[in-house]
Image (cartoon, rainbow, N blue to C red; front, top):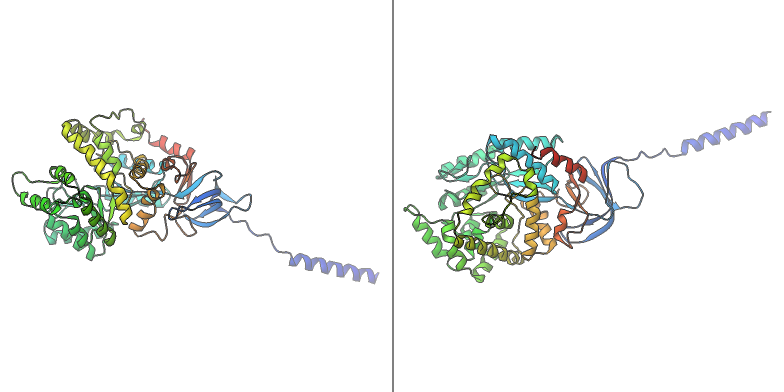
Length: 481
């Protein structure tokens, strides 16, 4: 009996020891979003990495690795099999404007950007700055779907500025006060407009802004040269009218002519001078300004698509555009001004518009080859007729490829180039642990055909996945009733 008890006691002790040493089950990590079996596209190198899993938590990418197991625990699971993942697209030139009466209409466009794979936009000046900051807070809190927004706040222009809400400057003191107010608003950069600003005030604005560490971009009065603006520290030039002037063999004499006309009954400006600028285009002058832009890191935002769209207004009928159904009627009403003006153009003016668009397109490949940073921008927003939020940026990429960029280079203009320009590339516009989870899942490879940026299977914004069905629901919510 004692032997039995001894044997039983030893057996029980061994069993208890074995149980004590057995490891407890590891708690399964639950991610917010998992994209499995997807092909990653590195938009910096063009490298494709197939069969990957991307795990997302708290708005960040936390794991990128080979998909070596069947399943991952996630609140949202996205099937990446046969699909391609790229960083979300950036539209580096949009507008939110029109005053309080158009605030709600502008807000609807946030949905259009997101539904077309645009996860970040750069607002280039308007009169809705308080609303933009309000939207940003709502989006950051997860209350409103939409892209991240960088904004310049109000534009800086001269006395009697064309756009409402502009900060009008003429003297150094006025420029100082304008920059003070922009810094108090905590804008992301300074946008300068050219409707009324003098050449002296334009260059002084750049100088003062640079001394404060503020980034400057904008239009440019034809009373100054692009080289002068670059010398003051201009960070980017919007559109290509000002680059084209610097490509003229007669730039100095044309600038002097414009300066001399100021204060007269018929001052010359951009549009009066463009025929002569285009006629005196010089490849040698172009090479010089492109080299200077590359050396001084002055970027260019070509906005080819809006140019093509506006040049076609006299003859193209947009009444049946499918996206009109998602443009608020109040914003559609703002389209009428440009449309009426375009239809009054003479045949000669229409021909010049087409010539200029061809010329602008011809500048793209040489600028890229020279090392100029190109930024994709649509110029979508109220008053810019039929340039639809989201879709127009996709069309911009297609036009950039038609102008001579490779699909990879075009993708770079709408991803890493924008992030680098805005100084945030350390945490976005790439697919790697620690980066913001702003991503675009496509059913076709955009490196084979850039139009595949339209083949959207899902958009991931701030770490939340929006599959096609969810995007369609968002669009239905803003469709005109």
